[in-house]
Length: 365
Ligand SMILES: *Cc1c(COP(=O)(O)O)cnc(C)c1O
Image (cartoon, rainbow, N blue to C red; front, side, top):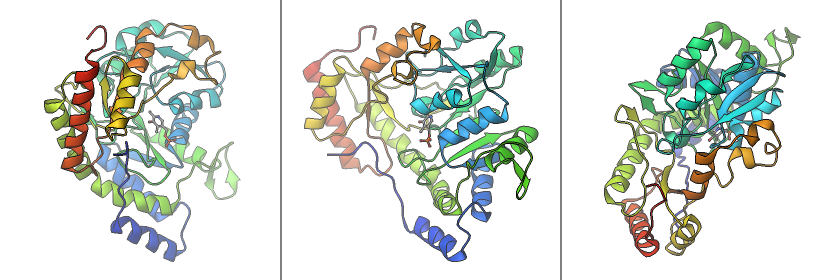
């Protein structure tokens, strides 16, 4: 079976982790600072604040904006659960809007109607590595004076109009093992705002600027130097890894038949964290791919507004027809850089054979 993800770690990661272990500096130190500077430079943002995960980076962003009980945060339900759980953890209320069926990202046409006097932030998701329509979202947000946090946890290296994900203001990334680059576990918050950055750095470390003297109630959301060492090596490999993802995606675009392939705006660079198809009879499709040796997967089998921690919220009573329909149709096939050309051919053959056997596109395709 060709697996859906396969992290690639090598001698560079080993050497850096080993030298960090030998140095005796294990927790947040010089390696974290080096990683933060390198990643921020890569995305084109002035500041990076590394964290223990993408989830804590998102929580840190909300906390640094002062968002809490009584506040509303507009986001999408067609995403990983951790886009939304930090909104609840800070005591705020999510407000879901639907996604665009072609881009899989926030339907900007619904954004303005969702803004109320209690709205305090907007969290679009650059899902599967396809950038959300940040220029349009930022234009609306600016008219209402609202901050925007891009959930770029799947969008390392994605671009729109020549700007990378994470460089639009506030961005959040994850370095979980299946992402385009990993630190084992880890995340980072990027920002162009120095006072927001200062507040986030303090919140990450018990509210302490001076050791043992908290200025306000904080957290321990730090990354370790061991994890940052993996990240430094992975970041150096990211451009080549993403280029390989693009070459695989180009073959899929050209050679797959009988399925809806992911769309891409001409002015964008897709990070192809996932290569996600839309098919009719999705569950049969998935089973047949498995029989043909291809480990496809569904991201995600339940939209957030139908998951146990969220389904009783008022926000979850709003109809999200596109989110619900896409959830029934989506299927991601392996697209990671470690795939061999033969494996890519096997995947193409399996998808095309399954499509010709099941022979239907989604309803409105
Ligand atoms: C992975 C991911 C997160 C959470 O990141 P972790 O590092 O796993 O905490 C949040 N949002 C999206 C869209 C993700 O894919």
